[in-house]
Length: 233
Image 1: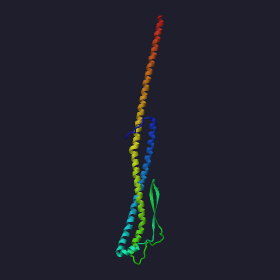
Image 2: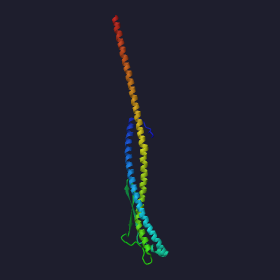
Image 3: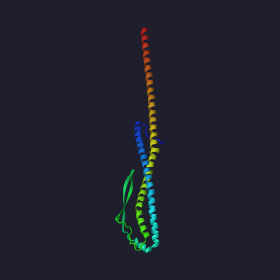
Image 4: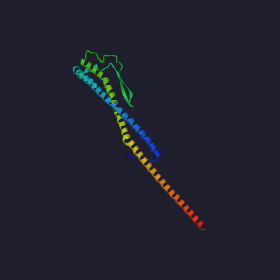
C-alpha cells in the first residue's frame, strides 16, 4: 500500500473520506456488473456451442451432398445449374444493449422467402444430391448468422469483462487501500498534533500557575515585610 502525498489536514481528511466512500460504492457496482457479465457470457458460450454444432451439422450434410453431386454431374452442367440464383438475401445489422455493451443483432432477409423452392435450376439435367446440397446450404444460413452474432457478442462481452476486472482490481488493490492508508496517516498526524497542543496548553497552564503562585507569594512576602516594618515603628 502506498500513501498519497497530501497535507495532513482535516479538510483533506474529509475529502479523502468522500473519495473512499465513492470508490467503495463504485467497487461494489463494478463487482456486481462483473458477476452479471460473467453470467451473460457463460450463457452466450453455451448458446454458441449449440449453434456451432447445428451449423457444422448443416454444413457437413451440404458438403457431402455437394461432393456426391459433383461426382455424378459434369462440371459444365453443375456450373450452369448454379449460375443464376433465384433468390437474393441480405443481412441487416442492429444493436442491443447487454450490461452497457452494444452487441450486434443480425437478421437474415430474403427477397423471395415465400417460395419454398430454393433450387435455381430445372430438374432435367441435375441430380437429387445437388437438390439436397442447395437445400442444406440454404438451411445453414440462419444458424451460421446466429453463430456469427453469438461469437461477436461473446467477444465483446469478454473484452468488457477484462476491462471491468481491471477496474475492480485497481479499486480493490490500489485506490481503496491507498485512501485507507492515507486516512490512517492523517488521523495519526492529527492525533499527534492534538496531543502536542494539549501538552503545550498544560505546560502553559503550569507556567501560569507557577507565575501566579510566585506572584501571590511575593505579594504575601511584601505584605509581611510591610506589616513587620509598621510594627517596628
